[in-house]
Image 1 (tube, rainbow, N blue to C red):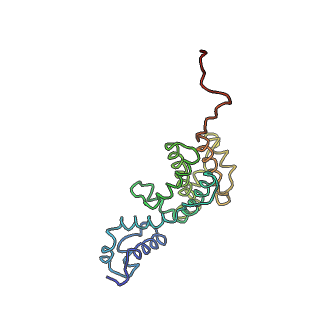
Image 2: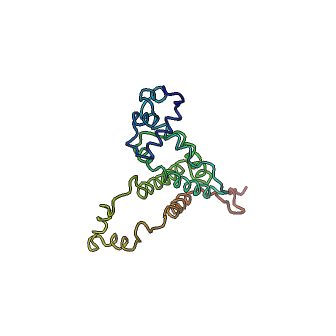
Image 3: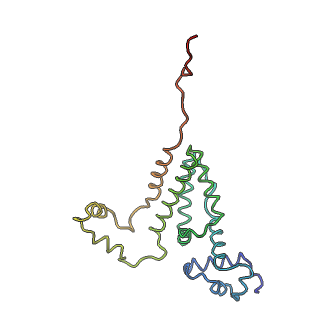
Length: 223
């Protein structure tokens, strides 16, 4: 066993390998080569590739924002989701793991808990708070996967060619909207605006305290 080989060093090497060459490059043999050691030495610290991948996910999840400034739940929610979006844009490959539904980093539960706490503080019921969380999470994942591909597509991509062939007579609404859009590389980041719309919709369902009209009370029969 190479002196100084630790679980942390193996995780760091595995993460470096993924970020340089892609998720498919992560093998125990490749990580061993990265560390200039024999593959067998890794198994003294990490059970297998899945265990290593989960450890890498846990390390990345530690960077998700939890404590954010803000006097209101909505302000904190907006800032936390925007910060999470910015952070995960540098780790889009992680989303390809998460959408499989097989792994979850328990460290990420702190982010989930903070978001749910603010949805509850805003007046949502537990069920609606969870629905709001998943709505924001799915928006974040979808935007990142669509707008931040793992590998830049060749220009023009098949997607661009397909959109360019849209027939205005058969698909008039799609043709009209796509013709009005600027080139993809010149479009502004719409995530903050879409997030605001989504939060407004969910928080509009918040419970409001019942206000009794002045003088109202139980009716009393005449004696």
